[in-house]
Amino acid sequence: MVASQSLTAGAIAANFDTARPTVSKHLQILTECELLEQEYNGREVYYHVNPKKMKELADFIEAFRKLWDDRFNKLESVMKKYKAKK
Amino acid sequence: MERKTKIHAEDGKQELTITREFDLPLELLFTAYVEPEIVEQWMGTKVLKLENKKHGGYQFVTTDPKGNKHGFNGTIHEFVPNQKITRTFEMENSSFGVQLEFLEFEKLTEDTSKLNMHVIYRSVAVRDELLKLPFAQGINMAHNRIEDILSKLK
Image 1 (cartoon, rainbow over the protein chains, first blue to last red):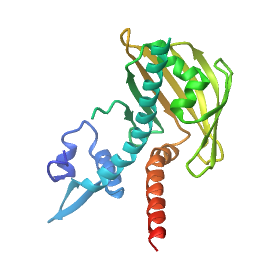
Image 2 (image 1 turned 90 degrees about the vertical axis):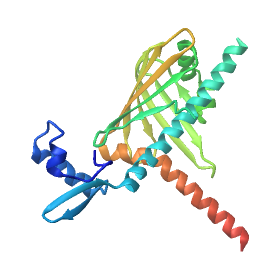
Image 3 (image 1 turned 180 degrees about the vertical axis):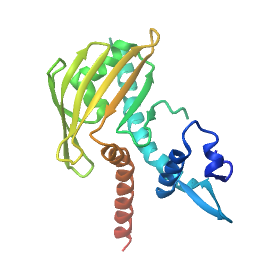
C-alpha cells in the first residue's frame, strides 16, 4: 500500500482489521528499522516505503536462497547421473 | 531464470522454510540425503559419520577456500524412509547454537518430488544472523578479492 503512495496512519489502519494503536506500533517499528520513512505535511505524518532498505533485506535473503538453490541444483544433477548409471 | 528454491522467512519469527521441487523420483531425492558419498557431492562437505536412524548421529566437515575447517553435527530424532527426517543441526564453534530441522519428502508425480525443510532457530536474532551469513560471506570474499587484486597492482 505504502509502496504506491504516501499514506497517513489512519488511512493505513482503515485497510486492516487490526486495532489502530497496534497499527501505529507496527508503523513505528517499521520506521525504526528504516523500511518506512516519515514525512510531515502540516500536522499529519505520511508514511512511504524506503525502497533501498527493502532491497537490502531482499538481498540478504537472496544470497541465502541462492546458496540452497546451488546445492539443490547439484543434488539434482548428481542424482540424474546416478539414475542413468543404474 | 526460474527461481526453483523458495525461502519463506516471516519478519520477527525464529523459523523459516525452504522448499524445492525436483525433477527426480521421490526415492532418488531421499537417497541423496542418505548416502554419504552422495551427500558429500552436493553439500560440498566431507561426511565423517551419518547414522540414518532414530537416535543416530551425524558429523560433517567443510573446508573453505582458505583451508579452514568448519564442523557440523547433529542427531536424528525421526527417520522415515522416503517421508521424513527430523534432526538437530549445529554449526560447531559458533554462537548460533543448535537448530531443529523438519525435512519432509513428498512424491509429486512418478518423476518429480518435493522437499520441504522447516527450520527452527533458538531465537529471532539467531535466525536473522544466519539468514545474512551467506550475504556477509559473499561481501567478505569480494573484499578479499579486491585486496588481492590491488596488492598485485602495487
